Image (cartoon, rainbow, N blue to C red; front, side, top):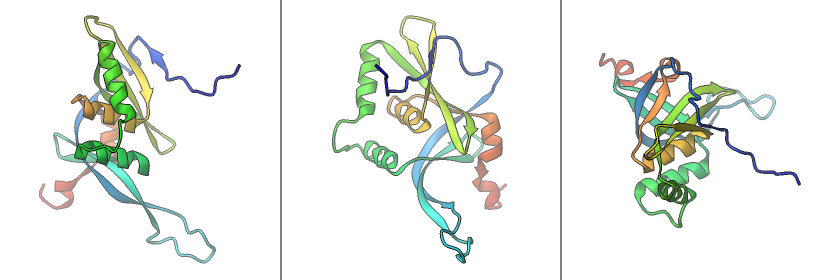
Length: 175
């Protein structure tokens, strides 16, 4: 029988490169941004064509901001959770409760790569009373929401912050 469910990559050894440095970031908000698109009809001009797209905004200790694009349904989930009144129990609540019952603690989410215009992330877990850690490959939005719900740190690889973040103070001429 063929399984149609993809299995997350689970390894009990360190998956992230040990020499890689990460920046601690703080969640700021869910925003709507515009993603440039190509014209859909011949003769349409490409300028000013954008699609409203939700994004999660994070800021580091130096004032740099980075956005991570998410889907509409993920944005609704973030909004419901952050406002404190989801319409129904969420999978994230179930996962958080399950991990707690299994004495597994979320240590944080690490955004570690960008491939095909998509960020990649890993959720670091630790069994309570054990020094061993495991990391699960996850969608950034899933790991980020679990970290936010669990009040755990979120890290972005320094190279990604250097290349894709913006410094609002610098743009406004305040630096």
